[in-house]
Length: 120
Picture 1 (cartoon, rainbow, N blue to C red):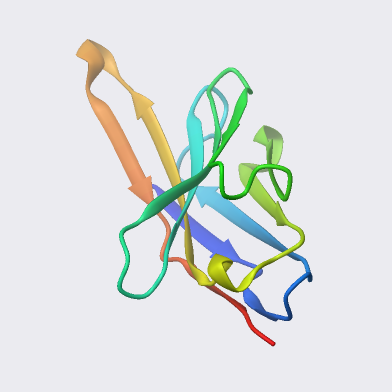
Picture 2: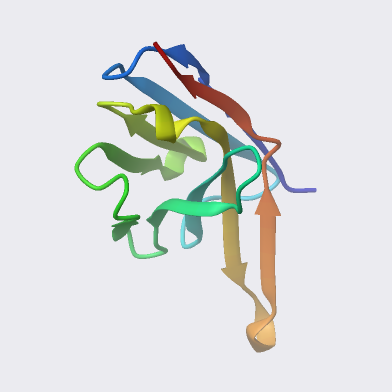
């Protein structure tokens, strides 16, 4: 079974920083797409940052220049460094692992989420 576990959430003041981690068991990260999502109360889930199977990164416009996604394939762990946090960054943050198997079958796994709260 594939399991993803997020950690590192908490409460910070605007302008502060947090670092999130997502560790996987039951599979390996190498060659797979890793993505951080977030969902604020009453709003739709939003893609925040993506690390492609080839190691490229993509970011939502709302977090560009402030957030950094990175991965350690040897440790099966993906990270999200969040700087210059704003109140609108408040949300539950989820990590996602996605890959395609034989005949383009898509496998999609989610963690349980970790709460990030930014307030003064």
